[in-house]
Image (cartoon, rainbow, N blue to C red; front, side, top):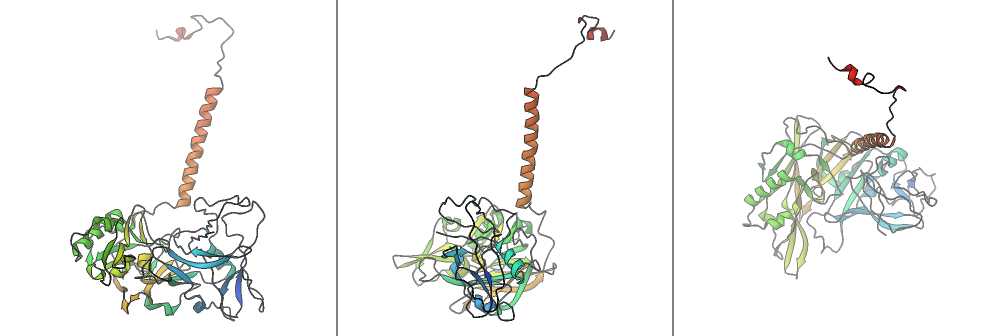
Length: 432
């Protein structure tokens, strides 16, 4: 059985490696017919001093003073940009060890399982009435409303790596050993996603010179569950054109940029020197300033497989999107990303694992001047769209009901008992 967890952040399990007290998150068993896609059944509580956590419980490591020990959370993820990043969770009774996908682009705890007569409710669209897992964790344990991610799959082949890449999910704050330099923050514009404001894109330090609103159509979000850097169609086409013009490879196949073909080089030859770096500018918490995230080709020209032991094949880690710009794993693998929900901001710092053979594959710089707003009217949130849709359905149903009543109920007119003659008819009211 496979278990997938998508959430804003949802998947929150930490294996306790110390003898300190822990926060226990035991899983309850429900009676038949009571299952639902809700986190309400997860009860978080601080155990008594000498109480140990059962093997089937989720545990959040902490030191004797009650402060969260972030070092116990380091390297608790596995995965890569192609398959996503996950952590192991023991769930159910008896406990089953399952891989849980860590996804900041969704909010519900979703479980994929075989059909069972006890399961009467199934996941069908994110449900805004369900409290996300991390929200429950914050409310019931009192940890700070912050989590941070490090994803260490940069430059690793999806199919040939003997072990999946590692990573860290830190709940309750940020771990300084996982990043270099300062953390640069950008405001969260809308909390339905981790929506941010992109000001401009550069290819090899050359501005694409697009209207900045193009970058935020219809939104720009930070999503660990999306494997690629996804760009609105107009932006994507501009990036591909710029890369094609600046690349040292002539007559490059369009299928490579479209994601339908792989590009292969003789084993041992590096393709990254043929491609330029790409920079994304985000608005700072000081609205008059911005900062720049730069990803090197080692992050977006991604090794996939080898062919007959003689060729290394790569894919293009950027794709077009019809529903907004998504800063996915392609970019996030270069940075340590802090989701500071308490202060409504997302932070970026260069990840300590964003290097290949000792050479950094990402950089961050700033501050730079920031121009005017690049966001128009905010797109309608999904719950509001549902409300509008149901309201319109209700109006239509009411109109249909009235029409049916008019068709079914006979129309009755009353006439006087006297015989109808010309004198008693409308004839007498004619205009003379």
